[in-house]
Length: 272
Image (cartoon, rainbow, N blue to C red; front, side):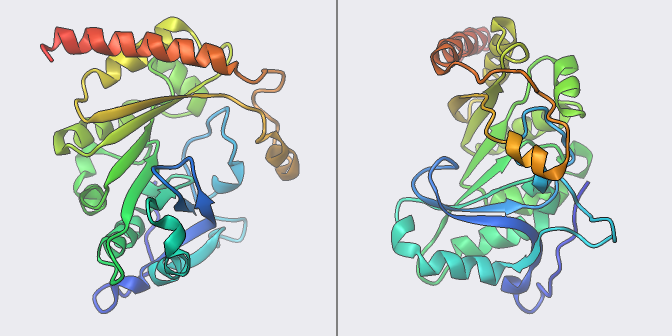
C-alpha cells in the first residue's frame, strides 16, 4: 500500500506534502549523530512487538487520513532552526512505514541534500514492507537520495515472519537485494523477542541473509522491551505479547555473535 503525496512539485518541490505522525527533534538512535526524526503515518505490517501502533492507520473512520499533512518546507524549517545541534547528524524518515509515502520522502531527502545552508545527511528506517520488485521504479527516486538505510529484518524464517508481522518477508529481502545492487550503506536491525526470535538458528538465519549483501555496514540486535504496551491500552488494542518478558541485553549480545559467525560463513561460501 502506498500513499500519494500532496504536491505542486512542478513549481515548488518544497511544497510536497505527506502525512506525518510526529517529529522527534533530538533523536539519537535512528542513524548517526543527533537527528531530526520524521515519523511517517501508515504501515501495512502488524508486528507483534510494534511499539508505535498509533502510526498504523492510513485512513481514519471518516476516510480522512490520520496524522498531520506536513510539507517538506515545514520539516526543513524545523531542521534549520536547530541546525547547530545536527552538525554530525541529519534527517531520518521512519514510521509507520516511510516507503508507503515514497514520493514525499524522496522529495524531503532531495531537498535535504540541496539545502542552501549545507547538505543534510539522510537516513531511511524501513521494513521494506511496501517495496515491490515489479514496481521498483516507483522507489528509485527515494533510494537515489538515501545516504544510509536502516533495514528491519523481522525474522529469517518465512513462516515466523508471516506469523509475527502478518505479511511475507519477500518485500524486505527484495529491497535488501536492490540496496546491495546499488551499494547503499545498510545497517540491519533485528528485534530479539524471547520465545519468538531469540533462537540461535533464527538469528543465524539473519546472519546468512546479510552474508549475501556486501553493503551491510552494521548489525543491530535490539532487545525487545515492553514500553510500548501503554499505547495499546490507550488505543483499546489487546497487547499481542502479553506476558512476554523483556529480552536480556547480555543474551542479545551473545546472539549477535552467532549471527556474525553465520555471516562470515556465508561470505566464505561466496568467496568474499
